[in-house]
Structure formats: structure tokens, C-alpha cells
Amino acid sequence: MSLSSSDFRTDQVLDAVDRTDSVVGTVRRAEVFRVGANFRVAHLFLLNEESEILLQRLAPTRKRHPLCWGSSVAAYVSAGESYREAIERRARQELGVSLHRVAMLGKTFMEDEKCGKFVSLFSASCSGQVDVDSEHIAEVRFLSKASILEARKIEPWSFTPTFVNLLDRFHQRIA
Image (cartoon, rainbow, N blue to C red):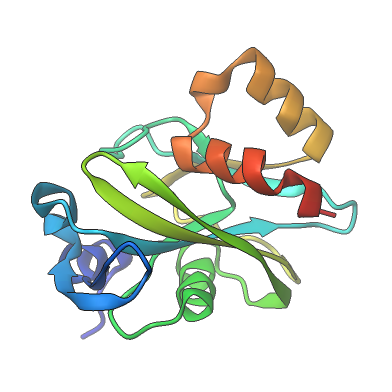
């Protein structure tokens, strides 16, 4: 019996980390915000041939940031998993794609509710059609970096806080 992506997230075990990103224990994803544990996530800016970034708009049923635009893929990093393994796993689950030319753009730390999270940002390309997990994603759209930066000025509330942080911090490194 295989688990659906929603079943996996319900039971997912994360590494709890300290302020230096060193593992200090584990925590269930469902409990991370309640207990205030620091954790790890990976984000991806998926680029097409025109260097446009695929943005995903979160489904209206999402508990956090419904209908906001965010990174192409976002992944909680499971216990014992690397940032890169997490982003490759989640790209397959959410978009049905295998990644090519994966590059780490950087890593940052940010507050999230009463937790802290380390966020590693990757860029990559993919081949083939994107197959969206409609349970979690309302829509996807490729946009130029200039269009995203302009939209962020006009409607900053329409983007997830993590995406805004990554865009502000790393947009110079994006092709």
C-alpha cells in the first residue's frame, strides 16, 4: 500500500535543528509549530527555456497561505534527508517532474510563527509536461523575474512570506 502525498505529510518526521542547523532531535510535522521546533525546508525555482520561473498558487483548502503564490516547489525536509533529496522528492510529488541542472542558490534562516526555519533555495529545469497535484496547488504559471518583482511591489500580500524572503534575498542569483 502506498501513501498519498497528504498521508506522507501527516506522518512526516522532521529533524529538529538548533540555530546553527545542527540536528538536536526529531519532531512530527503536525507538531512542529505547536512545539516551536526549528526545522528545515527546501524551495525550488523551476526555470523554463526563457528563464521564466514557475510559480504555484496554493489551493484554497491549504491551512497556511491559501491562494497565495509561492515557489515552484516547497518541501519540508524529512529526518535524515538532505535539502536536495527533499526538493527532488517533492518535485516528483507535486509536479510529476524530474529535475535537471539542479543548483543551490543559497540558504537562509527565517522566523515562521514561533519556530525558526532554515530554507535552502535551488534552481533547476525539467523536461516534459508538468502534472500538478491539484489537491494542494490551485494553478501554476511561468513568469519572468521582472514580472514577479513588479507584482510583488503591487500586491505583496499575494505571495507567501517564504517566497518573498527568498526573492528578496536571492533574485540576483536567478538567471
